[in-house]
Image 1: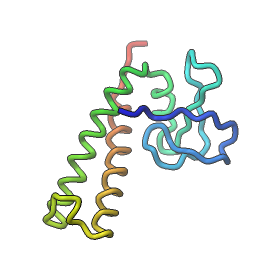
Image 2 (image 1 turned 135 degrees about the vertical axis):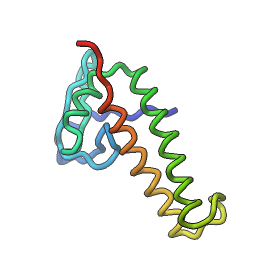
Image 3 (image 1 turned 45 degrees about the horizontal axis):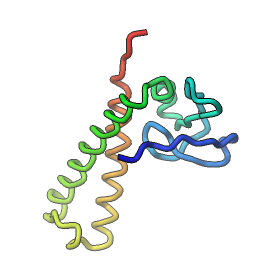
Image 4 (image 1 turned 90 degrees about the horizontal axis):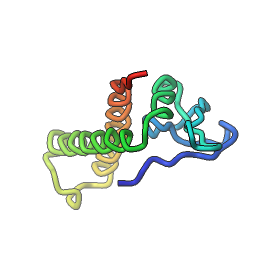
Length: 123
């Protein structure tokens, strides 16, 4: 599974994605411990989660990411079945496919953020 990319951007105006939901960041950056010059960016909705994600070990984040992807895939597939009565992507009209993609991306971000919220390491 591909890992979420860190960004080396130095200015929020450079654009990028929120590390917690994969939507557009809004300029809140957090240094990653033990990763020289690495910053992850967060949207305004996920600033507290950005701090958690920056401190989370990569192996744990990978587990959360995989779980979020599986849940998002199930949610997007269920929407196809419920809304269009289809499960074969090859049978979708363009607008149905875009609806599927939008559901998948939004569900992934929501699921990942929800799982990060529950992360509570012993400090």
